[in-house]
Length: 636
Image 1 (cartoon, rainbow, N blue to C red):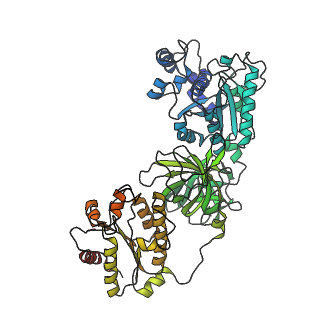
Image 2: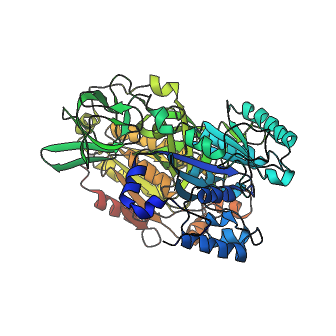
Image 3: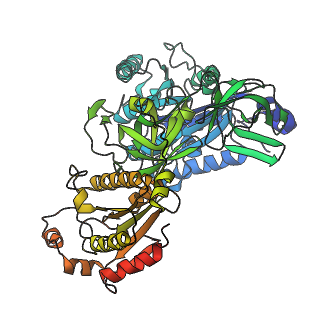
């Protein structure tokens, strides 16, 4: 490699690559982010760090010099931001859009830095970058002081558990290195930081472009006696160091079973240290055992600590699989299914209260519903605002309920067991990120009561297999009529049934619900729970509801046992259903007198693969009922 005359990288790389790799193999790793408002100089700062740490090779330097002259913002000088702003759109606009990750190292430490976008519309990208960081460098343009995005990013960093904060007051060269202005910015930020619970931060006056206080002390700031940015980055305690003092936890990523004689549990140690002979507990089952061995590709280890990926074998054959957590037997995490959490909404479509999403926490994936937010947080004033939902980039606090118990710890104590993402079940898009605060008291004090007469006993007494016959279709399609005909035929056959009709249920159980999207979701959730209880009693349950959303019908299906949920699509074209208009509802909806009416101003999502489909244009209700009976028999 030909070296640039003014830019010498580590000579050991060219002389002895093996020696270079050995030298750097055991360095600690610091993950940090740069964030702040638009054009505060985040990309320039990272470019300067890469340049000063000699992490740019000749071809990269040549390309940087060429790009700086072509699209740079510094005239004929090197534009360090171009080292990081990799997207064409970023270079054209001079902004950062996506999170850019870069690796560099010094004599003392290795680093992965994430350059986070400053625009408010890309807040979700910033959350992604901050979720794995040990430290945050919050930049402030010395000319502008503390801005809205400064507050937003500081608050998010604090919420995401980043306790090492650096306030880098950048572009000091543009204010003549004025100490008084620098101190005024510090005072302003310190007041804000205290209001959101930030206990400490390190302030450094810098110039990313000129290099002041980046790697060497600047003569332009004789009044500043603290460390340079690089000195601080090299000395600060990394997150894995703090995790060593906590009890052992390891989410199980994979059960390694290469042969009949070996069964190991592979995963990344999240906190603490583990050694052969240590007592461990598998959660959520609570079964205990002792560690027999700790294995890696390089052989067995005498111990493993936070940050290491290992395979643990146990002395006893206990039930443990992916999604479970191995923990210190005497200090296990909690297990619960209801929580309070902070949620950052990251999707263009708003949160739908009551809709089922996937929650992924570590290696655990469960179905979850989110209650109406307790409040949304105004990051400018820290005011708690009333909110019915959360829109893109909104931050709120809400209660969430999972469909089964999960192993967790408060995010402030354990990121691996306290941080989660929300995934839309239909699009598979990540729509939110969150941090668990605590389990709700009712989740800790409410337990399943064991009973002696089981659902199988109830079914055997009735000599039938419990089923849910879920009739779905547009208003006026004939759901209730057909369901009633089916129940009459089942009664003649001495089957034990119960019909839940949409209108009838809204007179009692669901009379408090309206017809908004959230209310419709809650309506179906409650019906699903009632239907589940009725199948526990051994009944064949018939339900006649529009149930317009696939996700909600899928939620009810997941409540039931294998083969118990039978979706019956009463397929009637909208124009036919509207012609019937037995209740006059379509007429009112067309006149604007009835809002959120399915088929008019609210969508109906047809079943994609229903067990039974009946066409009421081609069949009479009696014919449809006969067809359904023929499809579901035998029910025994």
